[in-house]
Image 1 (cartoon, rainbow, N blue to C red):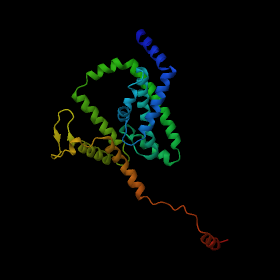
Image 2: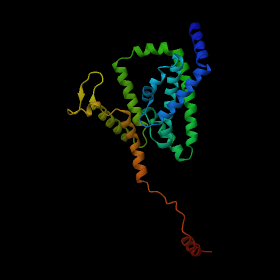
Image 3: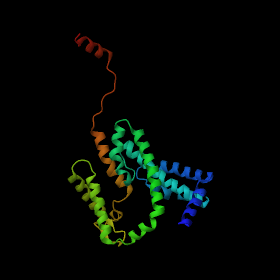
Length: 248
């Protein structure tokens, strides 16, 4: 334990040097810019900006990639809160509470709460990982196919019951998503499923842009069908007529 704490203190001392903090700040800013784009998740942001770290010091490169990952996570929350458009799957739940606050004129408050929650949540997760990672690894290695299947079913049921409205509709949409996810080539065995001998359908529909499109379609349809109120000023003749017709 003493060796682990000594290494942790030494790591904080290296990470808190001013040049490494600058690299981390650059990564956070770049992650915010890339994370706002629909369909661009953390992995996409790291893959695009990874060549920038080839000529950098190793510590600075790692801190820049870490800042890029956390910045992309927060950048995806901006579209979820302001536009009701989850840029990547983890922010689908953010739309449930963030966008209603935006419609109430509290978008800035929602963004601030998201930022503070991300800071404290990440700090708690890192501290927990430092002290409990060996024990969690032992539990993870004992998981078999039955336990993994149970966790997947729990996640699907939790996602379907979190949906607004009837739980039956949520379960139906979950089943529809599973059916769409079956199309394509299996990642483990390479067997083609419901491709109908088409090379286009071999990739399936599990890409991030397709998920963003499905998530944004209800908001787009609702905005297109909602009538807009006219904000043009009333002509002077009409206002004068209304004034004369009003009882005194």
